[in-house]
Length: 236
Image (tube, rainbow, N blue to C red):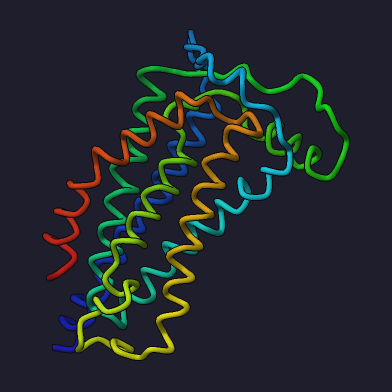
């Protein structure tokens, strides 16, 4: 009986097994040289100036997404309604990132927007140089940076647990007024950070406007499917 209860409580964490599979696939693609690449560019890219300070929100993407996964996972063990949020976000990651990898294989893309020489010499341009030295300008469309940030934002904003007044009454901390402030801070803070992350991909020349738009479209197309998947497998 205890084993069955433990399995029911923790089984949704098995979705995390996808992460090493994804990382392996991504690393293999980074080493693979396609016979041709499609240069991603639109005229709006030429109007966007290089602004190295946006490297800060670009780097904040890493703790934002990892923290989002950890937040939903840990909280889902205590609050049953958050299991839906975690499973929904897991669907977004598994399906969306798999589509991104498939797109990179079927339609190899590249970018030629990075400056040959930075206009300034400071700590931010140094960070840009390190990032762009590690991350080659290929496999860019759609932008994973943008896609994952948007999907995490959707899940945070749609979460009943983080929406004041919508938390089920039987859940822990459901009606504690002092908890509303940090929930509002998390919701609106994630909105601002997501906007900055999306802009950062453009201002430090990591992505084209095309990459951003396609990532946005992909996230919106998967939005209803992720909701259905969360209700189907995250509430049992």
